[in-house]
Length: 150
Image (cartoon, rainbow, N blue to C red):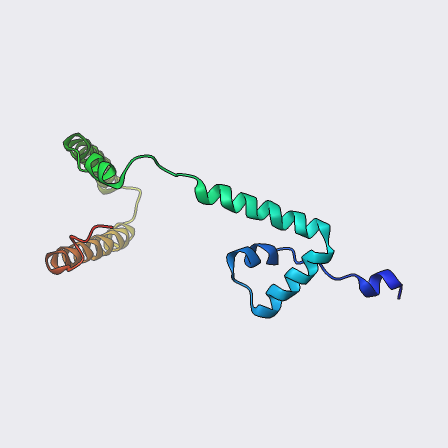
């Protein structure tokens, strides 16, 4: 073995980020500190990570206040638009489902047993959906977290 390979220590790599975040054990922290004393590349990388962390920590994600955001989301126009969107979506879905069911019912090429099997699958899914919706409705009346603001 050469002298260089005996004295070379592995670089901390991802441990630098963990070092900055305080996620390392005491031994790992000491190893990173000792390594950075001797390795200019890792020391520079650690300083770049510190600088990046400081810039990101000081950045503002949104200038709109929480109260203003809540007012915007509770706005009547937003509620009406959302209601119209759901109404159009459900109306379109009902029309498409009705047409598919009509075509499925009048198609003579599909055997009757296949029609019953498919109807049973979709009927079962519909009954499950109704049971979940019913349960959610019952729970919403007694939900103690319903009016909690985040």
